[in-house]
Image 1 (cartoon, rainbow, N blue to C red):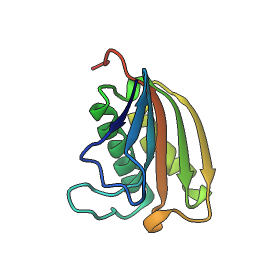
Image 2: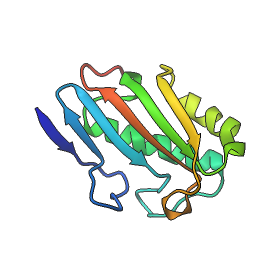
Image 3: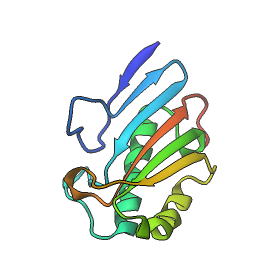
Length: 127
């Protein structure tokens, strides 16, 4: 089984979906810190990290799962100097401590300070 996951998270800015589900696995595309209500990005790394986490969580909900079922995340930072501040917010959202890679990149779309993608299992939700 394969299905496209669509949600109210900010629209994709390219030819891709918010996520794809293949059997019980959900592959969440990178989520920028764009507020789905306004289309704007908040200022600062902590606010942007929070918004990216919330966007990942919205996609996970649309796939009938949640952050407790995330197996792996990949996090992209525009500046590794933001690592500690990013981790503070990330730890509030991904309490199950999934496997993770976090790398600094030259730049991110729309001038974002961070972006998060995830792989999760869609089965019984932990609420």
